Image 1 (cartoon, rainbow, N blue to C red):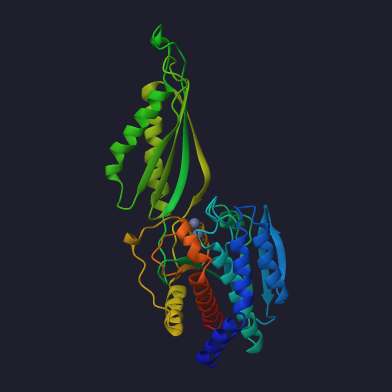
Image 2: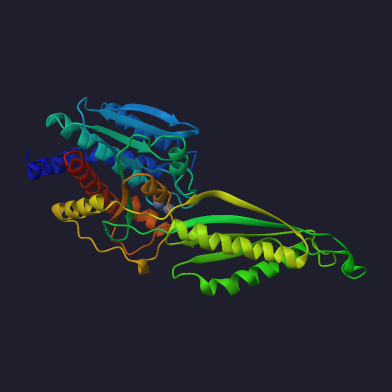
Length: 380
Ligand SMILES: [Zn+2]
Ligand SMILES: [Zn+2]
């Protein structure tokens, strides 16, 4: 097989379907939907995949707006997956550019399927419709419910300012600490009370005293959710919430979370109150990209002439549920740049994700995704 020739065919196919893919991306952009409500986005992507001969299952497990689309060549080979996201943010719509993520995953599937058929390449292609990334729900739930079972490799593109073949993201978790004390009149008989509010204050200070021991790039930030009802009542209830992040999930779990929990327990003991600890949502793992995928993405960016830069810690890092996928199977997230000098989760980013920069990135992403899938499906 002449890989260079086939990759030129992938470019030609991505260009030939350009208007069709752009229409899907524009439709999702024009109909922003929040996580777990992205029915129109799901429909647009499923319709595209069905039209191009994929077997599409709408909804997966407990997630109504997930989907799994499959093309099985009937010949032996690996199962390779493109991941899609298509949820938006409140008020600022597609300010994370998920219209481009969803359409690039589905578009790469449409292109690569045609190449697999023409060149009789064995294996199975799956397009994973992963909802609710912004609220860090979709992929973790799909992993738990078995959607990724049997998938050998998975990849996703995220738009950014610059193109990067690799990624770094924090492991992250939110925890709520609820203290319960004993109410009393603060002037008449304060000795009768036990203050849940004092426990919250002590916990905040304890965490600040401990954070000097955390490894670099640990992030621990807390807010007071409930500090009591009135200044003349010893607070019976008080609570705070902490967001904790670290560069690897093991350190987050073994060290950061246990230290912050310990600060809460110590504060409760000191104030003589009871403590209830609740984890809010999923524990998100750091992104651990598969090196074969990163190397292939970088080579394919070079092939199409896409300028790319290294991913570094000082570019600013967040968290994504893609991380959990990269811990469960060989997987990767990479970036295609919109090149407008604006950061995600801003109205300015939405403007470029829905504009000509977005169209250019979509086309480049589909080419890089399809070529990387080809590399993996045909690897010895
Ligand atoms: Zn986002
Ligand atoms: Zn995003």
